[in-house]
Length: 377
Image (cartoon, rainbow, N blue to C red):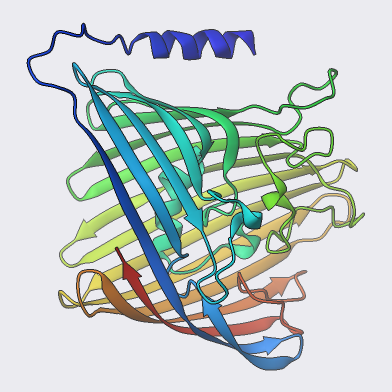
């Protein structure tokens, strides 16, 4: 812990402010931005029946935020983001009712040394690999690799390097803030990633480790009660349904290549769950997708996802296949309507299909059709 604090102090020390004598006065700005999305969803099998839902976030999860910066001179600026997530259908706050549950951070940024921020932030897997998942218009079973960003890291300090030779690096540490002096790592997070971009090609690698996430001994630690969500299907042991996770590790690689009017994406992630009852689960996700910009107003997307799992103690090997298709038509630069269809089939030892965001099917198959509108401002 002392080494981490010394390292952060060293980075922060690089942001030496210039003297008060400046040729031009510093400038500051604050931007208000947001996104609204809503529609309806049809589920082919929800606990044995078909079902029609009113859905918030059919195209993208709603939000409203404040983004600001102050020019401190010499290429250095202060930065902050406060971003609230909410359900547009009910008006209630998302992220377990937090005021700024999507993001809340403040820090310093320098063109030569990079950016250091502190608060509730995204970890490296979301930053580098999440865009590939989003381009797929689907979610890996139970969002097991956090590609859909159900988990943010609070009490965190984050460093983003400048881009050098087409590469950049991100590192993050989330403090556990636990009461157990024998385990200061409880409910802490460490994450690192790196990305490369040159012309039409971009690729990245990322790794995140969560230690005893949402642990009762550290309720105010890096991973909050978001981890208790019923949407996260693997946050409890398959042997003892009340036993949580001792450690979750996510490692992955993926990226994009643009050819003509089509963006091609590919992703592989390897996720391990070590439970507090000494049982273990490993999941491997493969994601292939493409988005064709058919016209300036119409995007057509298709993706295939495959997840293969292995429980050690109960010798179970579940598998899930999923395809996603989307037609997204832009009425203007800020308003679009989309039709999205996802179909999932459970295989191997998996008995139920569960398309993310909806209750499980009573069988190994489930289809979900979404129709919605999105407006950004």
